[in-house]
Amino acid sequence: MDKKDIRSLSLLELESDFEALGEKKFRAKQVYKWLRGSAESFEEMSDISKALREKLSEIYFIPTVKIIKRLESRLDETVKYLYELHDGERIESVLMKYNHGYTVCISTQVGCRMGCSFCASGLEGLFRNLYPSEMLAQVEMAAKDNVIRVSNIVLMGMGEPLDNFDNVKKFLEMVSDPIGLGIGYRHISLSTSGVVTGIYELAKLNLPITLSISLHAPFDELRSEMMKVNRRWNIEELIKACRDYQKITGRRISFEYAMIKGKNDTEACAVRLAQILKGVMCHINLIPVNPVKENDYEKSDRNALMKFAKRLNELGLNTTVRRTLGGDIDASCGQLRRKFESEGGDKNEGLQ
Ligand code: SAH
Ligand code: SF4
Image (tube, rainbow, N blue to C red; front, side, top):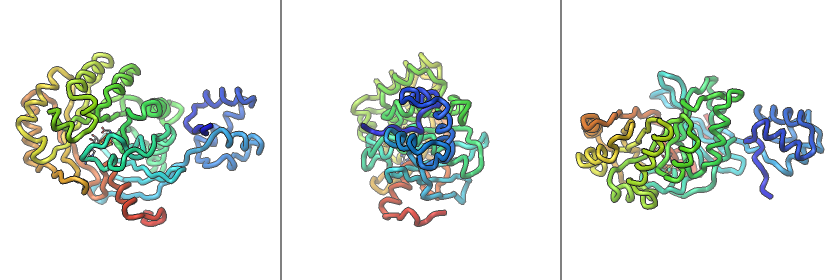
């Protein structure tokens, strides 16, 4: 039997597990306190009997998340973290400072199986899904390490959130719980490459989070070349899912669009975007693509970016150019992890 992640359980769930194990309910509360603190093992739980600790360690495990690298941008206050998990896997998250407060961008998987051609996270495929507690830890640790209150969360780090649906759903419940961090759904954005079945599942939950769609191209041929997911669900199916999502939730949708020189920054792309998004209540975020060494994409230059944004606005699409943060610290998904792995980084090396 696989051991269960005890840190992803709510107090109620833990209490009901304890009852089923024939243990007293108040013991669950004691253990829960340790888990919400910094306990890394059952042995540390000094007010719990040895027999119970042993019993627990046969059924559960405590996923640990340790900072192994911390990079702070000199250009802005962006901080990038590389974490090591209990099984030696590594993930990254980024803390960003905006006028309205602090936002943490978290990973939802180790690696990613979607394999988008422009992205460093998917180059080696999926290693494993993250547990809800491992997502929560990324938020908690960024807050603790900087002695700040995190006000917003974006699920835009490594991984495809809708490919780890149940754990992401649990994480959303945990992080918004007023007894915990209490970060309301309205302050959370979830980004997907276009997993249509997941969009419908999410719509059923009807949460007031912001759904972000990584669109990046308005033509199937181009999008399928850049994003394998488009070969499974094409643009028509994706936009239909967005319209249906909007009907159910009434929420505006964000579309992400990474601008690649000469590929998706043309007049024809702008016109087509306006056609396919007609009637969708949305916002478009343009961002210059972050070149990774495994492909030859170049970012569109500033002029092309501004021209494209202006054109989209003229065509009736509410468009902004996203500010890039942490340009000096590879603050783009998957980059730090890959760099660290390929340098054969020792976990004690480069600690800041
Ligand atoms: N898997 C989800 C969320 C994580 S990726 C998704 O794809 O939406 C977060 C965002 O970063 C996505 O919009 C993704 O398209 C974008 N992205 C990935 N690599 C990039 C790169 N090299 N340059 C610019 N944006 C990139
Ligand atoms: Fe995965 Fe998103 Fe990267 Fe695509 S862009 S490989 S879906 S993390």
